[in-house]
Image (tube, rainbow, N blue to C red; front, side, top):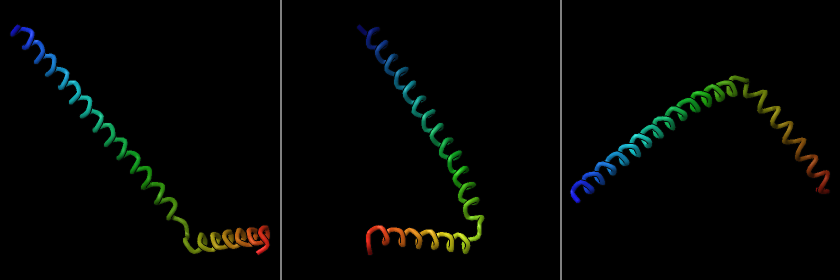
Amino acid sequence: MNELIAEGFQLMGVGMGVVFLFLGLLVGVISLVSRIIQSFETKTVTNIEGGTSASNDSDLLEVVGEAVKRYRAEHNR
């Protein structure tokens, strides 16, 4: 009977160890992927902000103004 209990504790320890290692590996992989994604996001934001904001604002105003005109024309307003 004592052998069974000892074997049970041994199996429990191995199982808990495997789960601990798996969860640790999972946390490491998620952290690595997060850093990789943040580096791409930083590069994208830098590229987007690299243009002149005045020309982007005027283009945006023209597009929105045209959209409002078309909406009002289609809905008789």
